Structure formats: structure tokens, C-alpha cells
Length: 193
Image (tube, rainbow, N blue to C red):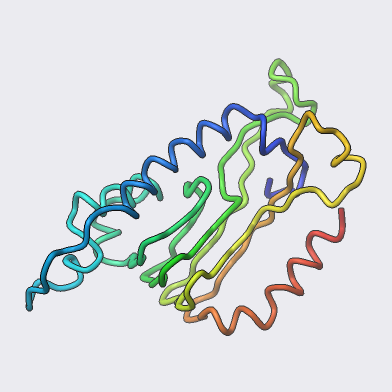
């Protein structure tokens, strides 16, 4: 995916399994009941959840629970398709409804033949979130993947051809700063194919 090569995002068993795993953790995190009353002095754990809730987010993102407790503040609902390639450089805050799509570590070969071990490689489209980055606008959407813009690839209805590109949100950037250049960057990247 990082090499912008096409991959099958619809019928690939490994990707389907990854999305199913993610749905389980997202549902548990997003639907965890809020604290009944505010208690002064407890801190953000009463707002973002006790360890039982945060453990779902830790599993989803592949991070230690202590790191989630200390640095990662995500308002539910939070949506992603895999979660495994979202990298957090430091502390950050996500407002309600953030969606991050297209991030997954996937192995396949150039020839798409599982017997071709020489060409097998790991590929990923990572979304990197900088230190103190603020995805503070509700319903911010970050897509590192796109369905093919190649007509020939789209005509093959037996595959769900897609491509992914890495996305980086720098240190101290917020959603409004990103809007200035995000659309132009996506058009530049995906129009090459």
C-alpha cells in the first residue's frame, strides 16, 4: 500500500479479518457508558473512561494501556478500518467522530501468488499523528486509501482495487491548518494512477 500498488480491499481475507477485529474494539470503546456523575479530582479518566474502556482502544491501536491513559485522548465515537498503522508521536486529542481509513499492515506478492515467496513483502499506509496535534473539528476524516481511479482496474468487478498513501499530521498542527493543503495533496497523489 505504501508503494501505491493496487491491492484488493474487498475480497482479501486478511483485510476482512482485520476489519472485523477492529469493529469489535470500536464498538466496545464507542458504546461504553459514560460516568454517571462528575467527581472532582479524578481527572480525565472519568471522562474518557476507566481502564476497562481504554483497554479496547489500546488493543485497537496496538498501544500499551499506560500510553493511552497518558497521551491519547479520543472522544467517542471514533472510527477506523484497521487502526494498526496509526502512529502517535506524542500526546494528542481527537474530537467527536474522527474517522481514519486505509491503514493496515498487509503482506502480498507482486504476482499475487501465495507461492511466490521471493516477491512477498509487507506494505502499509501509515497515518502519523504529530505531538500535540489536535483533530479538534468534529467529524474530521483522514483517508490514506482510495478506490482506483484507473478505469481498467474498476471494470474488474471481482476485485476491490484500491491504493493507499501515507498521511502525516505534523507536531502542533490542528484540523484547520490541514484543510488548507489536504485536498490538493490528495488530488496530486491519486491522480498519478
